[in-house]
Amino acid sequence: MRPIFKNMSISLLAAAAALVLSACSNSLSTKEDTAMDLNTETSAKDAIIYDYEVRKSSIWFTTTSNGCTSAEHFALQTKNKGENEMLVSISRLKPDWCKGMTRIVDIEVPIFVPTHGRKLIVTNEVSPRPVYNKAKS
Image (cartoon, rainbow, N blue to C red; front, side):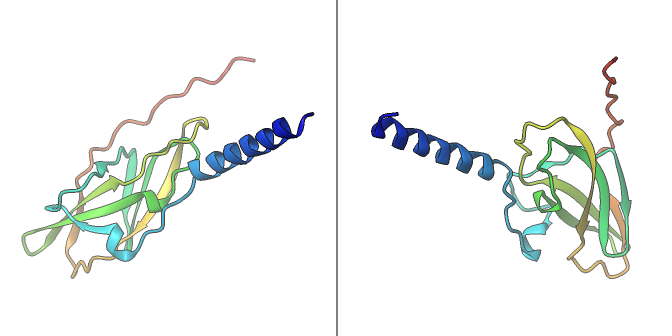
């Protein structure tokens, strides 16, 4: 192999490896990133969820993943509703661009906003679970 082609193939291999590694990288988030106000304009979209449970210090839900979805890709947006209730919207901050087979995953996002004993009401629409046909053997 000629030296110029050898160097070019090594460069292309390195570029492809960097692209693959960056495709599923997780963005770092802080407490401030995951607790937003519903009145704030954001580019986040309401997450499609199939089930959820409000826990003492977190919200657990199921959603779809192509292989790269993690809790850091979601944020809870909150809005007070009277003295006894707080509306919570689960938003997806980062799309899952991985090419794996779509599957249902469990996600748990911590609640960083003080609830002061209010009842939390999740405002996301709960979608029916998708049905996947098994391949016939």
